Image 1: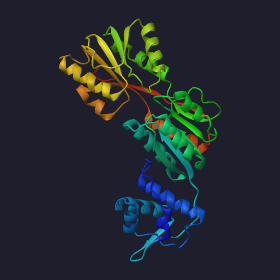
Image 2: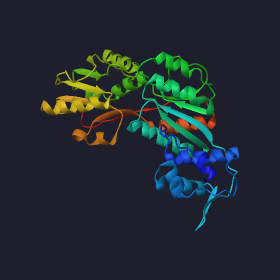
Image 3: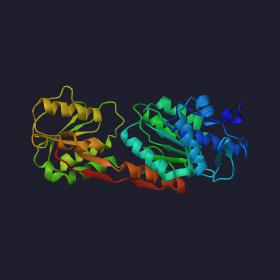
Image 4: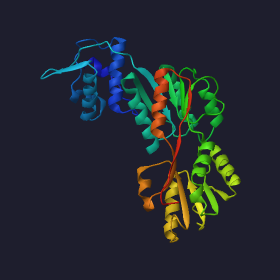
Length: 341
């Protein structure tokens, strides 16, 4: 068996694309001296069979290694290692709390900005402290940088205490500044309290046509309670009746109200109830939805959104990593006004 087949690994639990995992395996083999100049790489078919992955994945990895100048192919003979000197990529452990459209935007921008200067291993812990703890304790010592989106359903303080055990020169937090995480570390974050307050201030002219603002804030959620503070502060300053709802299944939609949803599931239920009640969105009922997605441009002739710049978040986190910076960068919040208000 080709020795390189024993070296190459694909972790089924990692969210990192398989072609990148294969590239990283080969780079690590070169760095360790297990793979040497003039070594013959397995054929695409051999790798595809051994790693139980698609031929297109292997082809993509080989094409990227050729672009990097490390591999060449000879018709009829296969692929060869032609250089073993390259800039060593920074090893990055990337831990996201969940997968979503917005998290994909962050990841894509992060990975694109890093390019070949970093090797990313990407894992999802599903807001679960125990999964997070297992991943972190098993893996953090093997990486130069650890980039985390810190959201937990339970054991939040335990999660933050665990993050505090990471060497701060390694640490970058994304999305949220976790209270209790101390020391000098890099961060790109949302200011949840200020963001919703300023967003609603930008919408005061449209909101003036309604008498009540209702925030749908799910129970047992990882959403920051600072969103509640910012919302209530706005309602108090501008004298709006208000209500905090945990969900909508038992709630009767009331004309004259503006509903602000955080979770996408609640938006679906809200739209269903508006349609069932023959209510006119933007007149009888106002809707504001967190987090911009392409479909919200279309639903019911356009849903007004308030959203952070997820692309910028990924880009800035990558820049902090490359610069070894401990700067804290607040990501701007954007209002997109549409016909739902």
